[in-house]
Length: 117
Image 1 (cartoon, rainbow, N blue to C red):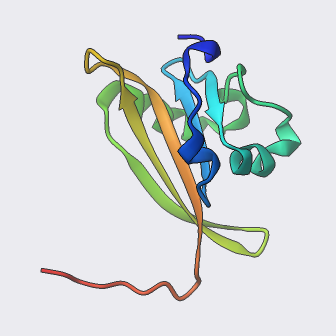
Image 2 (image 1 turned 135 degrees about the vertical axis):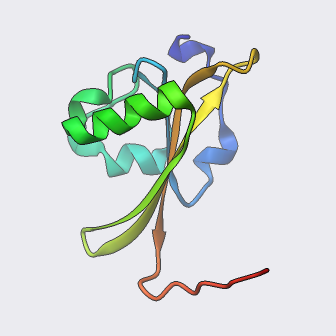
């Protein structure tokens, strides 16, 4: 799949989160404006592999998600901001894993947690 095959994702441009989409080889297909700002130090990543930007441990997790179809979620603190990172495979029309989507959002330090049984 080529970058030109990805339709405009206008809702993601207006989202208050960073959204990055890659194909199953790790080539970045889409980044919304917030993601482009977040990763500006790497230059424009669209059309480039995201793998060199990651550690061996992270590349292993990416490979596992692409092979097994599971998601990955964690929190980080960077630049004085706490963020939640959610990574999940996306599938093509046939149901095959086609790549990954990462959503990164700023979260409050004292984020409420509600248990709803």
